[in-house]
Image 1: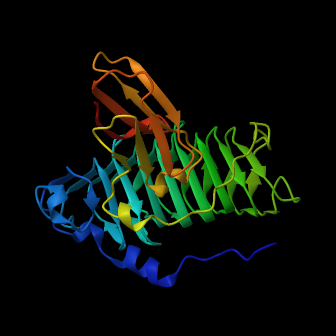
Image 2: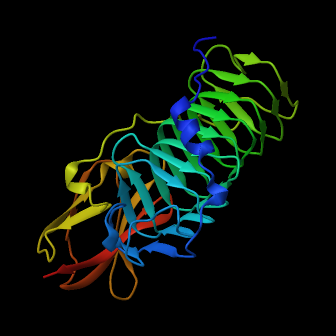
Length: 324
């Protein structure tokens, strides 16, 4: 075995599983983010106030950053298709409520899904350390998950999308028709079923240790090139309010400049900037690979234009530009 199986920190398990989520008195409040900003800023939430375990539901519908551990015991936790939840450090999101759905972009140091929780991912999740799962988890066919260190699955874990990780240890039932890309070790201690394609980049393919059952329907490295996780990077201070991009000058005469939040460059998804005129006609399209990009005016007429920034097809920012 090239590495020892990493066990999740005792401190975190005590925090996640000994807190009696079921005994928390919910306030029946659905708290929705209505502006970009930091999680701890009460003004970005409606109704006003920082989310707590007493809230019934939390919906992230804008670009929200956080720099502390987040514990969720709510009945509903959402990151919508136009929302993003971005970790500014190496923090933990612990989900111990009833229902979590990620449709946009979420990054964190550690993601822990507790036994009382079910989670569905339709969007993109970037994890710089560890995903530890002991509740029902479904990575849908549009879902992409990047775990830079350890993926630990201990319950029903269905992958119909794509998952890249450095190490994967399975002691539950891994199912689905999606794809795994593994940079280092793959250890199975229970069941791997379905029609998954598993690509272990190390010489000991198709697995390092198998102490359980791997179905004959599993394939190995047949689903095309295997995209491994990029190296996580930090977020520049000027973006700590959660803004995905800045556009300046605006209005502009000859050219304008985009500055992209580096957090959105840390995935294998296409990051695309599109500009439209007032009739809805597309006038500019750029695939973004760097944190700065110049947009030249060219033959654009004076007037109002609209832009949209998408990550993997999900809108994460939009706005207005004026050419004069």
